[in-house]
Amino acid sequence: MNLVLIGYRGTGKSAVAEILSRKLGMPAVSLDEEIAREAGMPIPEIVEKHGWPWFRDLESEIAERFAMRDDAILDTGGGVVLRPENTENLRRNGALFWLKASVDVIVHRIQKSTERPSLTEGRSFLEEVEEVLSQRLSLYRAAADREIDTDPLTVTEVAEEIIREYRALAAERGNRA
Image (cartoon, rainbow, N blue to C red; front, side, top):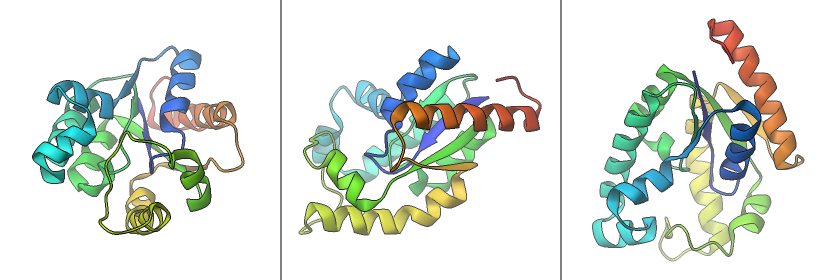
């Protein structure tokens, strides 16, 4: 069974995936890195050259491919939940953990990041995060097997909580963890 991390960017998915990989002895796969590798260019360039729909198509292909693996930690992009087929594919053989954070914490964590292009035109960074997060909250909630509030926790504490919950879910589903 895969351990799948979902949530808005800046919630700690990548950092937590690395810790989980070490502690559980499972490979961690960044789906965003796989998308960039497949396209041969960074995500901002993908979006600039091909647009968001092309990026989302490639994201769906990558999510489906890696969802077929077993015993991997999948660190997904924040928008993976926008397409129901992605959530369905990731759930088939995975436990989905939604890493949550408040808007203020997200903005503080990622305001200087250049890894992703803007999702909204003509909005301040804070307004973008508020708007996009509010649009995705119900999708994250519906997709998640478990929710972890990362605001008050260190990345190590988040990883430890996920390990406890993952093992409990694996036992419920008759899988080893």
